[in-house]
Length: 296
Image (tube, rainbow, N blue to C red; front, side):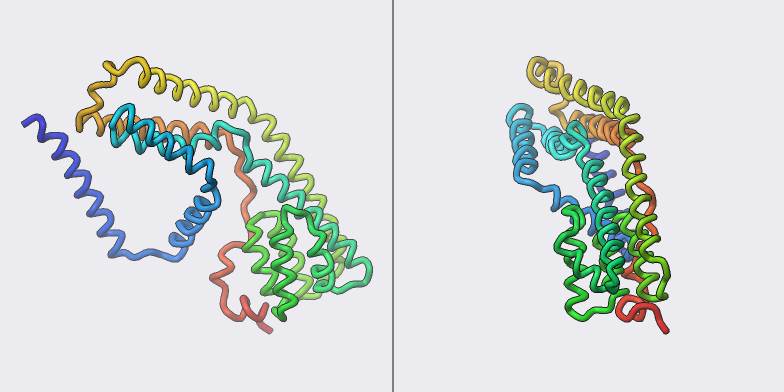
């Protein structure tokens, strides 16, 4: 009778999950949610390097050989996938700074080219080969759309979508005003935007330095927890023996989920949120705006 309790709990959880999936299926999937999932999948594919995948598989295999616990294999694989970026250097922050600096540099290139009495489209085409490396692929795609005969407003909106950066949104907004409304003093506006982008990069560097202590503390806590788990697996098999049962696996999953939530929270409070974007959901614009620019 006691042995059927864990099985009953597992079946109840499966029934609850099935009910949730049925309700979600009846309600349907909205486009914004679908786009968010697509963004998550795309980011996972971009992060799936050979070393990261090999490390995840190695951790799962070693855990399976040492413990033969399905829950332990899953938790070890997830830890091997998600924890190295948390314990390592903040590459996302460095990449964000490079992108902001690149946008500022390209904005200054546009300003200087426009000062030579060139039109906006000609300035974009001239700066595409020499744009900073952080934004060169997006600028090259923008120039390719212009060469293919696409309208400049639609090409700029596609550039904002691909760049996906608040600083790029500001520059794109200024260029859209110049393309659609014939804005004056565009060179002065681009200079102000470039200065603003560089000031934002400096501010983010100062904030990151002030949060370095929090990030270091989070790394120490996570590393100490992982060392404790490794020590228990290596020298305390008797202590971990109750986790080999079905109920033990369920408890291990619950405990592992609690630790995962705590690690995520530690990582979240050590990160710095960027400013919000202003050009979002451009794919939802009417066709007249996407393909022909602003309606006349």
